Image 1: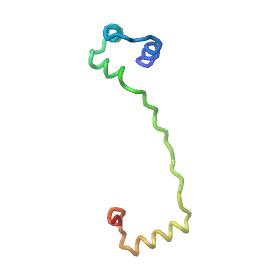
Image 2: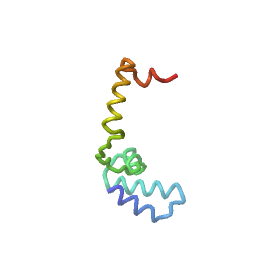
Image 3: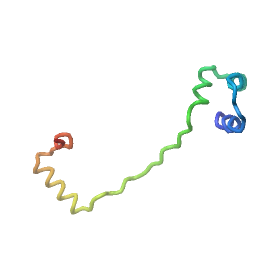
Length: 84
C-alpha cells in the first residue's frame, strides 16, 4: 500500500513543509499507523527479493586437486596467514 501511495506522491509537487505534514497526516489517518512508523515506512526504499543463485565452479577438477595438494603441503594455511 505504501508503494502505491509513494507513486501517487511522486506525481505531486511538494514544495512547502506544510504540504509534507498534510500528506503525512492523511497517510496516518488512512492507515492507522503511528506517525513515526509512517515516516519510516514512507522513507524506506523498496528492496528486491534475493534470487537463489547457484555459483558455478571456477576451477576444473584437475586444478582443484592441485590446489588441495598445495593446501595440504602448506599445513592448511588460511588466507589470513598468507597476507603479508
